[in-house]
Length: 218
Image (cartoon, rainbow, N blue to C red; front, side, top):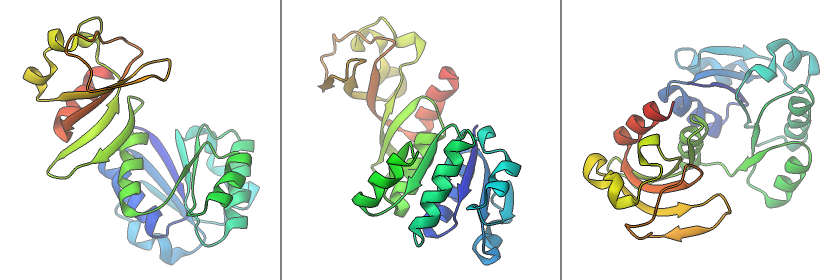
């Protein structure tokens, strides 16, 4: 479980809040309009009506205590830029900002954003899965409870070949790619490929199975 801050509750912020809470994270939401957060009173762990372009507001909530801060303001780029800058200045660990414009994304990254999300409901789900665990680096939903995940290997697999690890037989999970520490990618690796601790495994798996992996990793 992680502590998440969402600033700005438009459509994307709402989707993200629901998904993060669904994945058992603690979520605080902030918007300057009461109507934007009123329907999240039974969803978010805490809510605040405030203008986050104010340094005092961000200082009081202690942004450095959150694992990830999401800035989901899509209608006011100036405010978004100010908030991203303030968050990093006040010690935010990781700042993710939304935008639908490549040029604006460059400004946000130059101003302190660690990552950019291009918003829609699918990307909200993907972001929730990715940022809820230290062991998931990417996620693609395939429907029917199956998805593709990029994960770290659990200890029982390290040092074994794919076939020796018996991942498919034990977990009904298929390794379809390996990204190594040097950035090299292997698509459909040989069953004899040895799994290293520093590898990222790209797996096709059921969501419940991945939760079993995460418990072993944590």
